[in-house]
Length: 371
Image (cartoon, rainbow, N blue to C red; front, side, top):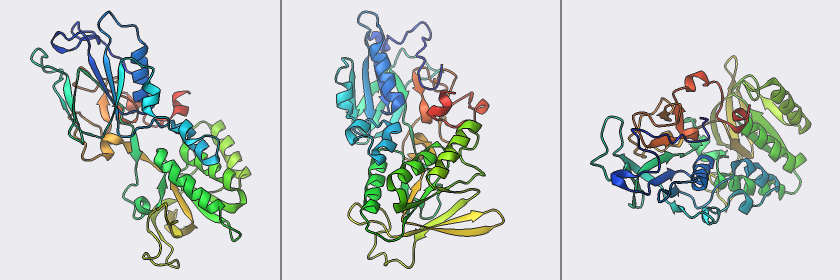
């Protein structure tokens, strides 16, 4: 089964529709309300269940809104409203009879479920503890925590660059774009987009389309081309669009640091990070080119799309009792069942399937999933 779904297979003669100790209504907890988590809840809700076996589904997310990430770009160019991009979970789940929503951040998971142990003495598959101390027991667990932005420890990136991974990020970028639009006269604003994958290319073209000649957009790629490893036709089409929008591409460029322009006001007068109350100072993006050549790119706004990591890896304090790979993704079998667990599944960015070695060169994007 693909990465977008969960194969709730039976084991030892016990189907999904059974809880522990004879419970007729299993408790299914889903951690993470992105596409994987929400769609799992919707699919489980829609299934035909045996009499008295309909599960109690709890969807847990730290935010109160679901984010339709493909529409984040439409938020920047005015093609969609915040309500369309980020509807409330309460509204989305309202028509569902068996699914409830809990807003909270996960602190830890204690699993009583193991392929090495029996279940007869357990009252549940495990317990989830939230940051506020609330505890939720589950019979089945789905981990769909998604990803978070990776800054790779590069000096100044986390403090000065604007990521573009969630709704809050997009709103900050939108506000900065509106500030650039409000300027009167002068030279075009410098916009640097770091990362030339699908996200970087689409963000660069979206900003360039909106700002027009008010901005000079540069797309920085660590590789020798944009969309490396993608189909030639897509690369050709993207190059043509970048050219039409006068976007400059800087390839083979490794960002070494980002800092404030020293000619700007001191840090006492200009914030070193984005603040809604005060636009950031001009910045300098320092890159290394082949031949140990160093280059400085001035910028009024730096957008960071250069990488992400599984949320299970980025949240260092998150206590999950499951095996992970070197990237911090949870190890699963081909059915997305977490290794050495019988009732725990993982999907999406947080999952590292045993078959990933065969597809490691493919990025986990919707475009690739539809190839």
